[in-house]
Length: 318
Image (cartoon, rainbow, N blue to C red; front, side, top):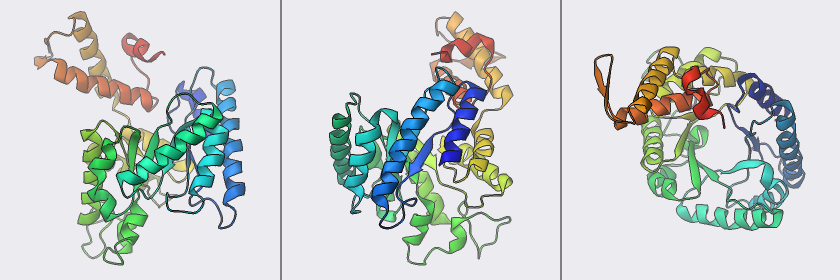
């Protein structure tokens, strides 16, 4: 966690923007019996990072979150009381794992709001939720529709485990080739279906779909290949990393190509000059539908730390 926070500050200074979130983990990170001490450590780290990034990268807003225990875990309320109650101002969101129903979201919202109010935070703290079971995938559209849910993430390993051995362990990872006996996370039909359902639910409700991890920690090529497929083929706009070494390959894969950025910038400038009326550019018609698309290209370029052409950089100066 400390290494990830240091890297966030370093890359925020490098790019002039916070290009990835750091999620401080209480669910898998806390030892059994040590939940109280771990939650207090998360509070200290979040508050320190909140102050440090403003010193290192002036004007850049840090993005530090906390993943608490699941809503049915005995430490869930304690996590929220300690972490949100002690570091609400430093948090960009709270990650709730193993969400199964809208009722789980409602319970989390109630307790988060209570803790945030005690801390003095005025604005609502967004929730990110992990979808990790077949039943949760079935309810993904309803969960994504909740106004406090900002993002849905796919929990690959728990999803595979929840099938009682019906999905092989190879589906938790990636491997070369198209071996039908060893399907990976991009070829097993049930896994791919779950990923598509979650992405579709998010886009239906204007939420952010976050792709699952790649467990091959030291394989940068596998990470970049997975990120490219997630962003180009499955409609994901964010992706989890489980090691700081995975962050730059993921950013590279999710970033638009330089040619896409230049095209988007030229079209948006021409559109602005035409007061957003239809234009002809390079022999093709463009109107507000394509303007929206190219705006998202520029937005994604900014979020992944790409250099924007001078004529559109001012759009993202705030």
